[in-house]
Image (cartoon, rainbow, N blue to C red; front, side, top):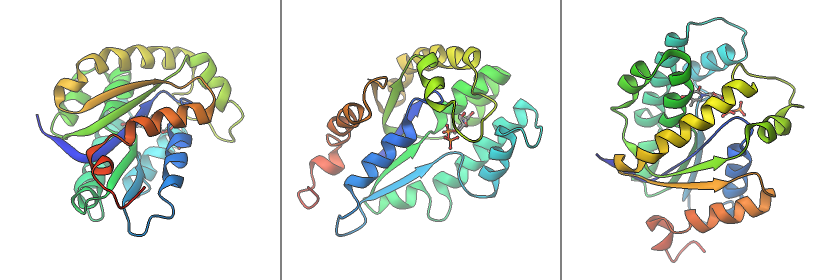
Length: 213
Ligand code: TYD
């Protein structure tokens, strides 16, 4: 199966640190002379993504299947739409997204069974690299318990199921074409960031370019 070169994805349970780690990674590219790095995330900040976010905050009530369709619709625009992932990877930029198809296979898989998320996501190409941030859900939830707003999946029972499902799916995920790396993210933030960099810096787009670092 095809994968998208120059495209990496951070995946993990809630509180696993994907967003923090993506911020640290983005800092490294802050002063590069031309755009070489594009940071992005799902659900997006476009209209569909915002609708998803209000459902995640329980402001509106949607059926699990509806949410699954919305995530896929949001992803289709994120990938192929104006200024989307493909546009940037084709310009030879490194694109890193906070979440992608695996989040749907795991989260919506738990909520509405595997069939629908698999059907809706099997047409999306895999990223070149997926980094999974692995952490015990108890620690992850402790880290985010003081956030000002909470989302529907942030409970121990769900996060335990999600971790198991991620592990299960990751076993076969590299067969889809992309590479998979699992990082233990319960350590110190900088320690985890160093591990991330040791993996990301081996991507061909960075390894082969002398002009950046
Ligand atoms: P998260 O990535 O933790 O971002 P933030 O810190 O901004 O809240 O939140 C996104 C939530 O959406 C997370 O609980 C996972 C969920 N999600 C899905 O259920 N399916 C998906 O396809 C995606 C992309 C996210």
